Image (cartoon, rainbow, N blue to C red; front, side, top):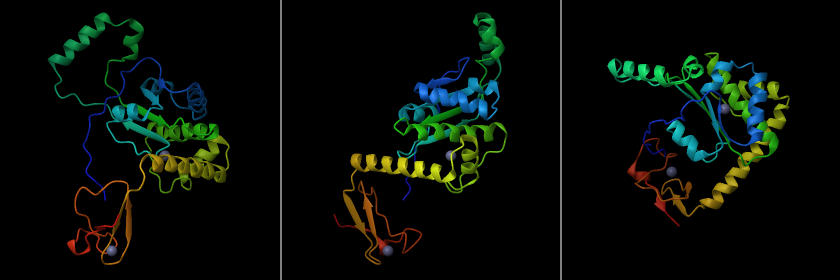
Length: 236
Ligand SMILES: [Zn+2]
Ligand SMILES: [Zn+2]
């Protein structure tokens, strides 16, 4: 069951000369380290914003962040101007009069693409390190114009690159990923315990839920599309 989500307008933080780092020193240090190691261009640094706060990240990207996510990279394309012309010209004129010279050359007021990164802070030190490296690999892919999607977390070409850049064995990276995921799962279960059990009247398949379904749903094993014959029944 996938519910339709409301689309929110992304609200990234205003650009500044350097990167925006709303995170611990540890995360900031690994960011600097792997930025250099991946040979990322300096001019992209002013387009980067990183946070360890889930709420803040959701405001920046305008998208929901699943509570199981340990790290996330989001590329925000430059916004399109709805009304170019007089308004834009006026604004530019205004800026050129008041902005200091160094800021003018960096063109901080010109709309640009943004790199937005989330890092879960409540992890082992090694996990924080490899997650920063992982998200920067996504950023490097985007800068190089070759974004990749995950085929299988911990087993795909992104994982191979992560091992190569961090010096960790693939097995070790998978172990860390597994441990952190189990930890988040336990935290989530504690916060949202399973209260409802739905059962298919046809095959008996069980659907444990933390919340009630807001509308009638049917068994996906018995029919791929909604079918009232296999409507799930609430047992507990
Ligand atoms: Zn990834
Ligand atoms: Zn069924």
